[in-house]
Image 1 (cartoon, rainbow, N blue to C red):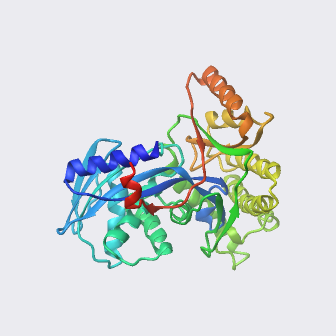
Image 2: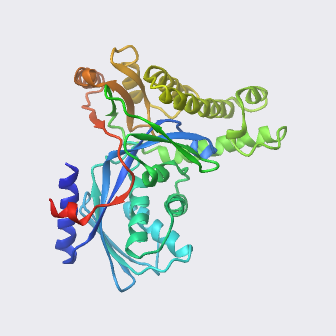
Image 3: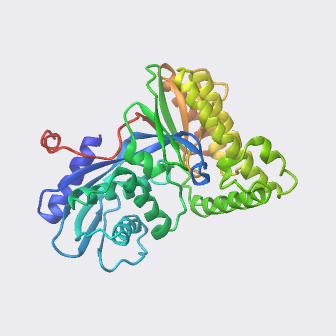
Length: 393
């Protein structure tokens, strides 16, 4: 399927611009555990997946950038020297990257670009970071800018923070660039150090159930949660001046402030502090090949997201709850910013068909919606598609 998508992107580019493009693949991601910890300088455990955004791109000799969204059948043009926020929201994710390159002093001309892929929008699989980091990677390549991988990550994150206006953490862009096959990546979002852990289980797969609810509230609520966590840090810092973020706070330390901050702020902080420890425990379980413990931590994360961080919704809760005692299911939780999108589940391969049918029927009976189901494979990060690979298509 992915070969067909990249070939279609390439053909559309040749039709529009009458030249041969360079092709890039930029993956979506799942986050196995460690949700809403990234902007609190904590730990996350994401993996790149086999769904991706594909870019066909060539440099131009002038200042104009011509974009075409294959999935939306829509085009947009702008000049490198004249970047303005657009009412076409999809274009802002790309312009934000150009904006950051210009601000950082890199010299680049315009470019022609066709992009599209099979990452479902609004499902919490980070199509936005795939667009941002993928374009940053592609522009670095075609203009020979010499930017290292970590700088590309930071640049792509700032594009979303500053131009798009979503105060996301660094996880999505990081795993997009640094992902490796059959490995998850523990990222320390404060030091930006990282460590790979094996995720190669012959008997189990990562399965996503899409609630069908677009997480349209996620951007505004995301920024609100970040603000609430910051308020908690300010209160704790009055006694413990070394505290720079919730990463520096232990469960015992936080308990001192249970009645010194309002209950909402306390709940937000409690979730983040406990979630950081869950990530560390999850990494230990992977080193031991212990999926049972790993799955139990996923359920605890979901409960925290539901009752303490309050970013879940009825449909996500239903998808998790119906699988809690189901044989063949190791763990389940909502994933992403919240208020919709997918649940991430670890399911025994022999049980996937049975579980899938059960979820389809249960969800249809309850909400009269057919959930989309994705059985995913952990893949490598953003890369150029070799010319000889194109020739085989």
